[in-house]
Length: 136
Ligand SMILES: CC(C)(COP(=O)(O)OP(=O)(O)OC[C@H]1O[C@@H](n2cnc3c(N)ncnc32)[C@H](O)[C@@H]1OP(=O)(O)O)[C@@H](O)C(=O)NCCC(=O)NCCS
Image 1 (cartoon, helix red, strand yellow):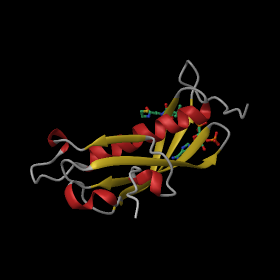
Image 2 (cartoon, protein in one colour):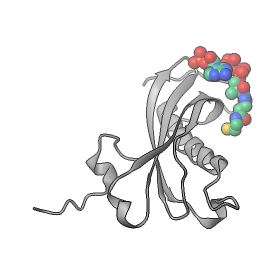
Image 3 (cartoon, rainbow, N blue to C red):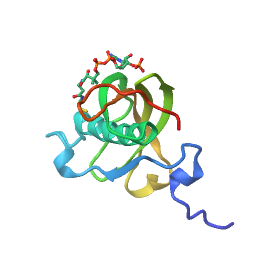
Image 4 (spheres, rainbow, N blue to C red):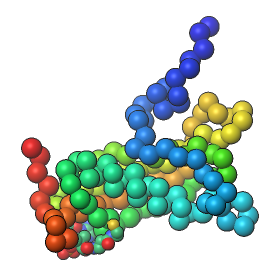
């Protein structure tokens, strides 16, 4: 049987991650697990990049709902954030962000979901005020 050399996200229906990185020792707490705040900032970056693309310009985070940590993340894990648009309002866009990891060693072939949340961003103008999101 031929070996599937594609990266795990290309073998799933999650699509391409908006952000991919590796959890480093500086991101860990004294117990050796990765800080939840670090993970949230990666998700915010991923969702913000996604929302800025949809809104065609600058956005800011206004809310994070339903942040859930399903499993711990360890140093060396490959961290991928996947985004999907859940709702586009007049000036806001809600993005579902899921984080999946690939562990080191033998579990390298299977991604595991570790966190999820709904991030809401607001498109802003040069003065930092909300601006309408246009579809063209
Ligand atoms: C984002 C900001 C410009 C919005 O200004 P505002 O006057 O409060 O804006 P509005 O009340 O008109 O709300 C704007 C949109 O946000 C939505 N919104 C407001 N509060 C919300 C909340 N708690 N959850 C989800 N959406 C919310 C509104 O429904 C509206 O969406 P719509 O136009 O699609 O219907 C302002 O609150 C701000 O600057 N916040 C700080 C942002 C920040 O510093 N983020 C962290 C760093 S990126």
